[in-house]
Amino acid sequence: MYKIAHLYPKELNLYGDKGNILYLTYFLNQIGIKSEVTDIGLKTNITEDFDFIFSGGGPDSLQNLVYKDFLTKKDFLIKHIEMNKPSVFVCGSFQLLGKYYLNSKNEKVPGLGIFNFYTQSPLNQNKRIVGNTYFKFKESFFGNTVVGFENHNGRTYLEDKLTPLGESFSKDSGNNDFDKGEGLLYKKTLGTYLHGPLFVKNPNILEFLLKDLFIRQKNLDLKTFYPEFVAHQNVLNKKF
Ligand code: GLN
Image (cartoon, rainbow, N blue to C red):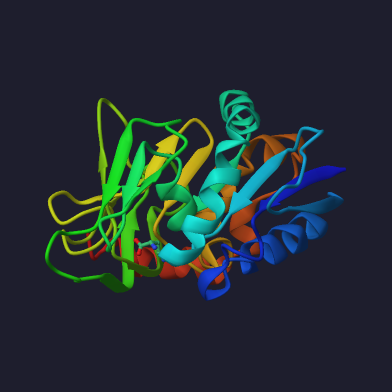
């Protein structure tokens, strides 16, 4: 049984982030792997390990609501991440993995500090980074372009040698206004600003996350699952 943890499904679920959970279980079922999803909300006590962790994004008000509880789950998350198990954190939850989030009211929301980055809203202006976007993801062997939708005020700045998940097509998109980095990649943990059905739009991301499973299922060739995706990638790749 493949065990999936969905962190804060009620609070952090903007633009249908939960669609990723639905698609993940559907996809696993298609390749013959049974899965179960455990919703982990505020005050849920975690007593077991999981194979996959997912959490979505949310407005500042809900980030304020969850961050204290999120802090209590830090050890659980570090253990999972360091074991090289897949996890995905979208926008608001991604921001909370860093040191802090300075929101649009200039309030400092403490993050878990698992990674050496911080997020802050631009001072004296409310200019959101919003719209459809795409970025280049180097870790995939069958298509490098990832497409999606972002809507955030916070700008994320990675420190040290942290690696972004990908290179955005423009400086007006992704983590901040100064570099083209999008998200964060560490082992099999992804932080990203892309909301909504990331997995169904981007099987190259799913392939990266589930590589170990695919290796186990030796007969699986993702290209036969997603012929239209492969064709579309050829078009998108020309844009870079
Ligand atoms: N509240 C955060 C911001 O505006 C995250 C928003 C989101 O998850 N889309 O930056």
